[in-house]
Length: 397
Ligand SMILES: Cc1cc2nc3c(=O)[nH]c(=O)nc-3n(C[C@H](O)[C@H](O)[C@H](O)COP(=O)(O)OP(=O)(O)OC[C@H]3O[C@@H](n4cnc5c(N)ncnc54)[C@H](O)[C@@H]3O)c2cc1C
Image 1 (cartoon, protein in one colour):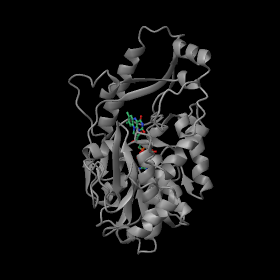
Image 2 (image 1 turned 180 degrees about the horizontal axis):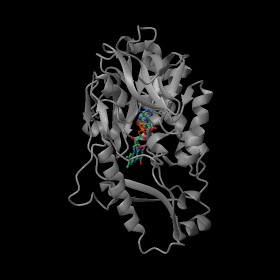
Image 3 (image 1 turned 60 degrees about the horizontal axis):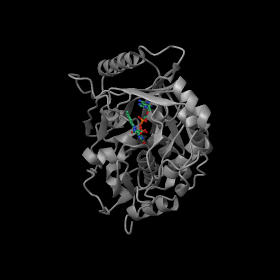
């Protein structure tokens, strides 16, 4: 028998320290809950930092209206303050690199400095953090989660909690708890950060560090090289698939450097997690389909635009964050209940911040309602989110 050490209880456990998870943890701690954040790697930020996805999609609708406030805005400012880019002047930036190159409220950021900044941001909010700790299984009593089993360098532990937020990016906790889930599908993507003699020259000429670093990517349909002909798509839910996804991507990226002089290029960083856009998402009380352009939903947790096109406006339903049969488990980030266009709209960094913040506030409020997310009075949730600067209005934009 493997011994399981029982650790101290927390009001709320957040599993996964990506953008959804850090926002959920900080939001819950700011509501006064005791919060433990469990992260299986040693750096916070998830895909946004360890996955090298260092482009913060816009907080605005592309027509001059801000759609996302709250932690989505707090984090973009943190990213800029600790990073290598600026915001457009229309959104409070200084345009220190000369003529504005873009209009939208978005930015490039440094994954390394952003990750360093996230540590402080989380700890300053009073969140307890355990790194290099792999949450393996939720401990279930009927449909209630009593805590999380964790494997770490010391062995196996059980961390009790009253509410649990799954921010794993693949819904590990919710799926293993029995929450209905749906698998996603991915084209091959393998992105690295590099620099070349040419980008170094641009950096010197323009004194702009953002021009030094370059994305070099392969596989993804989005980067023009296309998914390799005949290659299957990937779900990303088994070691075999993840290994094939990574090794194929590495082979293709190696080929892209063949023929370049070795003293004229360097790869700065390889991704430290597989760049799957979607692995698994929960089926919630409500599913956001992205067909609701311009419609204010009844119980929304905030507004957003669509990063891919200007002039579109959505509100995201609270019911996307949980399944009512599993009332003390909430989802945050890219695993919320969203499909099709709704998934595209909600999977990006600012919207993961929005859903993370809402999950954190809702979990903290649920403590007063028998740890039941479905019993949280919506009007009170909305008031608290508004107090945090979350934006709801899509009227008049
Ligand atoms: C190729 C690609 C390009 C993209 N481009 C952009 C872009 O340009 N701009 C943009 O805004 N968004 C982009 N995105 C989307 C965006 O990066 C992600 O959807 C978002 O960052 C996801 O955040 P998250 O917190 O939901 O999940 P993740 O970032 O996946 O975080 C999950 C965290 O949970 C941890 N974890 C997982 N399982 C466990 C466990 N069992 N125990 C403990 N910890 C665990 C992981 O280590 C990770 O830190 C892109 C995504 C991809 C793949």
